[in-house]
Length: 370
Image (cartoon, rainbow, N blue to C red; front, side):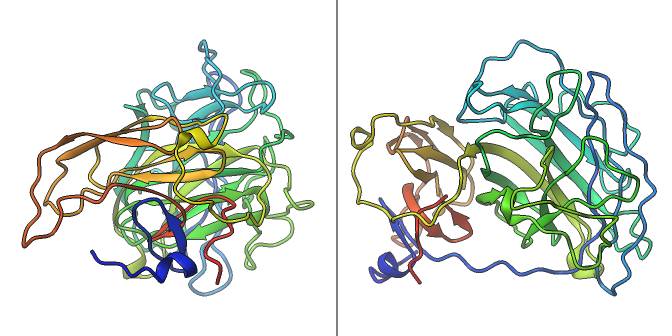
């Protein structure tokens, strides 16, 4: 893995490694959203969605799994929403609270619009989906997803009106040829056939990380105004949903295994000012983000004070052999390293960067410059 110094100016500023990110491309996909319940028991949405009218374009689908907060004791954290309890809360200043729940079409994964709340859905601080999508001209097999309630007090879902408007999301695994939609439901009780405004990220085989803001999602051209609407810049977000969406051709469906490993709430997005050099954690007064990475290509977001990505990048070996501890802020330490690179190549290339690198992007860095 060799990189030239010119990449620093045109792509990103890294503390160790750097590279470019390719622009996303859209493709026709299956139907979209489900809706989690707002009570502890929750109720599923209906499954009465219809296919879109445009060839190769997915139809709407109003089905969803049960969500709903658990009423569990919650310790507020503003730096990470994903945990093994599948229930989170932030400080009152951010005002985010709710469950993390699975939903699906009942065919592409075990979860269906009428399935009960999944127990043990999130384990080891990650929430995973696996299954196989198929080409379905009726769009009944539209895919499966992970929902995140934004403001559920345990009995009622609310439109989120707090200061957070963006989220740094990290996914690991493979989407199996399927594009992934990130969408925000616009009502606590969407009508049958409702379509949430969304943005799409291309199919990936080795995870994805990037920021998505309320302003980034839009209604698809194939949806009618009755099916999908969004008011103002940010709309009326209720749930965030990350959906593996079945496509309309053999190359845009397949077996997938995707894990949600991190959601970091962010404030209003901006153009940013670029990095200021390698500096350590002492360069900011309130560094945030810490943990351990053991996956071969595991990544995580840290703050100091802007957003950075730390990656294990154990690339020179055939399987994971390295663990690193990171944070708080822009620092990491190799804890274990058991692999050996071949043909003179290094076994690993752990790094922290700001900007864009491969398919990873930090929030509001102002990079790449062109």
